[in-house]
Length: 280
Ligand SMILES: Cc1ncc(COP(=O)(O)O)c(C=O)c1O
Image 1 (spheres, rainbow, N blue to C red):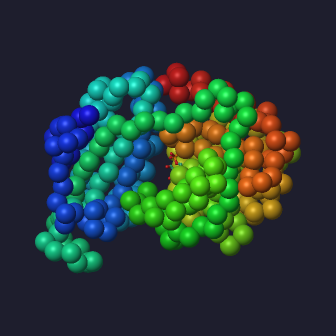
Image 2 (cartoon, helix red, strand yellow):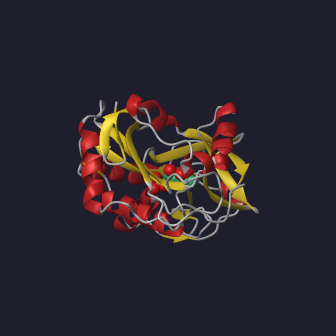
């Protein structure tokens, strides 16, 4: 597999970084995930804008221009084995002279990119929906930054995995924040609800796109804090992410969501989402 590292395209086996790289030592860096459908990136501008925001929040200078990012994602996508995939982009603060917490000025960021698989739902999963479990949100207060520090997210999804669930929905002080790697929506009495874009969640590109589809289809929506009871009481629950799209959750812990069936509003938004990314 060909990957990109610091200006070069090379086989993965030949890609090397310094053990003093701050991404390796501290998780000091950010990442982004750009979905590709048949050779075309979906919502590329939005992903690159968010990457810039994450870098700025960590005081790391964006090492490449938008056109340079575009050239890298296209080159990697062209040699991907599957037509639908993600391009993973990672920038770390770079390697310092020693392992010290504070960073020196003028470090050269490490830039890495590669193709990763997308895990889209099977037709059977679209018929039945999937199961999520709730877990406490144990993360820091700057979750709008797409940082490499994913330990709480990893522990959360592992809890879901051992309980044979598809996603872990995180709860902070009684309120829904987001999935381990997704945003959360609920439907109640034909109104769509999702938590607002505060620092407590990642500002999902799919989330925003879903809201634009809701607007287009005249589905009423509200961006507001959702408490855990509202999650249990919802008619529909969905989770969204670029790599998984819009996923219906029909079981929450040991409860049915609504009537336990995939809901009509999900069907409408999902069909619209699939149309949009097929036409991209
Ligand atoms: C914590 C978290 N929230 C939300 C999302 C969804 O974001 P997007 O729709 O931009 O993929 C992700 C995606 O990986 C994530 O890791």
